[in-house]
Length: 347
Image 1 (cartoon, rainbow, N blue to C red):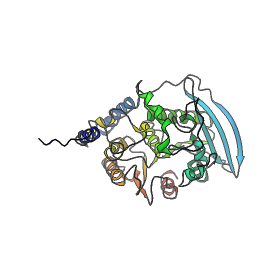
Image 2 (image 1 turned 90 degrees about the vertical axis):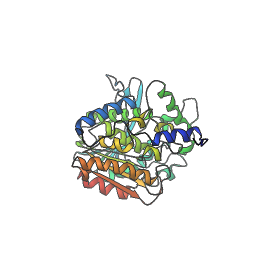
Image 3 (image 1 turned 120 degrees about the vertical axis):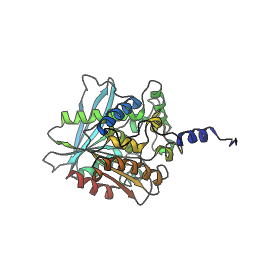
Image 4 (image 1 turned 135 degrees about the vertical axis):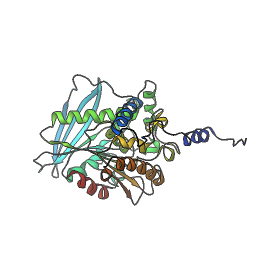
């Protein structure tokens, strides 16, 4: 026997590469039964469900109109004593019910990036590359809602610490607060998915006169793309999921390099690869967006994941609802490529 003198990480990687996901769809069994079993397991792995309070303490914090857009800043509780902050934006000339687009930032200075608002010195660079999701969605005729996600933006800092003027994702060590959630069977991704679900509940309750309930979109980049993907797997009200720079085989991305702690879900690779999980969205629409130069989610791994999901969609007669957009660049969003695809499905 040859002793390769592997590092601990190399050893785990080798073990993982030989591990067939236990809940991979076999293309022979009943697909709806597989989806039910796989969704139940995914909920368990994410630490869901959480407990929603009887009173969500919904509150409109402020409103404003500017440059042809109406803004509503509101908050509610998704758990007892945990407040979710949101921003709704729409065109002021929009009078009929419209699709709802949930917009999820990755690691950044906060949800204001989705609105194209510059508060900190680095925000201009963060907004560049199409990260002003909510503003673009409003321009496209949608009701857009941005969420201040857990362990990100204002939700990513200890109260005793001074908020830094600028954050790079690689320096966002406060996201490691998410580790504590693992000690009680929770995950950062699960908590974010729960907040997305509760946001949809809240918007449909309090802004029902604005929303076409049959047309709910969720999109996001990087960590926001990850939350988009898992939210669509869990919440069937999301009719179109547009995860960007997030969906990739675990072996080529999360296993292969350092990532933010919030990407990790204990035991998930035992049961699924990301391409397997994508089957939970079928037959609803999945538009996977990536950058061909993205080093965090390499194109080869993205294609592996997409090909598996595509095979599941094809097997179930809905291949046309699954697509891959490859942008000519790195780790960013590609709005000019993504929005025409969204309109093909939503209009």
